[in-house]
Length: 317
Image (cartoon, rainbow, N blue to C red):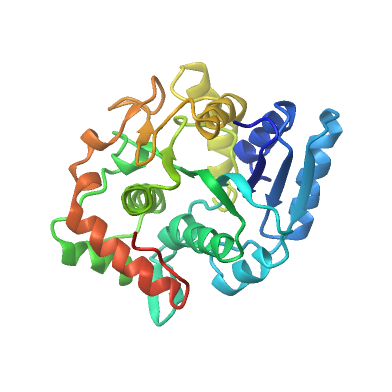
């Protein structure tokens, strides 16, 4: 599936994203659109890949893909060549490091920022690609998952909401005390709801939510203040790698490429590490958190997503 494919990837300048591009180019993808927040980051990614090996894959850098800015996303997609993508990997995003809830203004709503930049921004990107006929028939679309969607003991609290109202309150106003790592887990939870919704509505495409497991050496800590960042990068994650409870970006990237190629996951699947672990055999995540299959939560999130995207066409097939 990868050989001779036209591929679109957001956030390819990050640790895992960069390694994914390297592997895709080695596996003879026809072209890879490097969709970064800035043109400088996209060009850096292109040069970093070419520095390590020759490839016949066209590596095309594009800036402007700010997942918190719907207008910027629209303008960035408008600059892409009229060449439909066979594989779309919407992996840009990250953790919002703050002392309290942050929000993005979206079509009259305010939405919790971690959810917006990890989920809604990705969906807006996809809608603009569709609007410009840049999505090939039978396309495979992969959203990055995360074990935080069902919780990791001692690390990320299991996302749970007592009611639909509490669910909506969290998204639109914030609920309880803000903790950045838990907010990231909740954003992965919301992403899982969206992927299932899209897979159910649109049978012509493949929508997969995939996590390779806990990974060190990514850009996820870039906004964490020192000395905490230093401790995690130089001591915490290396120790986790040594103990076999985390993996390198290179190993994670190989698993992601297999998900892009169709080895892992059918449309609507939510896949990641075994329950109670951050790393291990890839398994179904849905049984680990009942909220992931709660139709009321899914519909409530879908209604908020539709309101956020405003005038964009939302297929209800």
